[in-house]
Image (cartoon, rainbow, N blue to C red; front, side, top):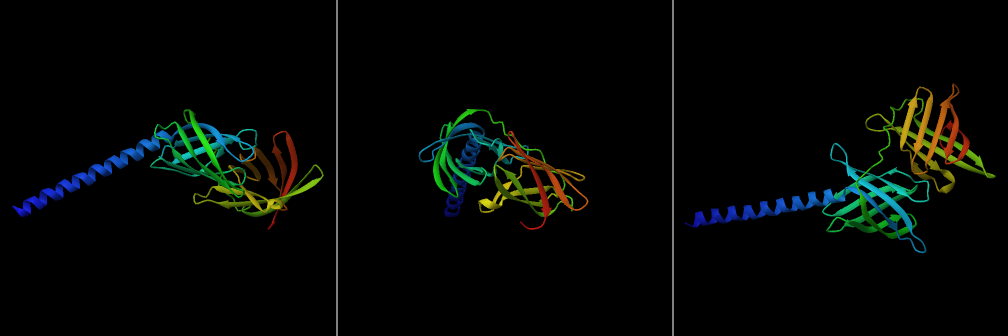
Amino acid sequence: MGTLLVSLAMKYLLGLLLTAALCAAQTSTQAATKAAGHWSGKILIPDHEVAVTVDLDRDAQGVWIGSITVAGSSSVDVPLSAVAVESGAVRFTAPLPGPASFTGKLSDDGAAISGTASNAQGDAPFQLARSGSASVKVPPASSKLSSEFEGSWSGSIEGAGKTRRIGLKLSAGSDGNATAKLVAIDQGNLEIPVSTVTINKNDLQLEVRALSGLYHGTLSADGVIAGEWAQGNEKYSLTFKKGAY
């Protein structure tokens, strides 16, 4: 009789644990579903507010993706990285153009996300409200990186009586596709991720959504990339030479 009672007790306990696990999984799934959407709100920086829109969704493989736009700035449809949604917690990072991290909490009704945005200058609260369905602006895939373009490059832009030194890092990702970063040398070597790298033989194109910028250059026989940087209505000649900046 004692053995039977112990067996029944263990089955009951296992049933409770299974029910708890299923409820936790259901809650996590519901929170994840609520996080997908188009969000509008503000970063509450002291003395002023910054209006932003954020889109969060899952791709065909179930991986979280997102994009962010900062009103009145050059940061438009900037792809997010390290997007995570777990038990109502929402986290992501974005280059604006310096790296900024967002850590928030999804409201119980799924109508709002509030939390803290952080960058090199400090922390500030942010508030987002659901304002529609998700419309993540995923940048086009980058091209395969060729050996001619791989490595570090340096150049400069002349404008408004100033010289701005620019670095460029080109490397291959795990899939062989090109990844790149622009480096604002005179701003403490601030690194700005390139959204898409397109290589067609000797032609190089860089889309930089954090700056609404586009670079197009051509690699010459002497190993120099001569081209033009366009940002808004402004255009500048920009030539990159191989080597550390």
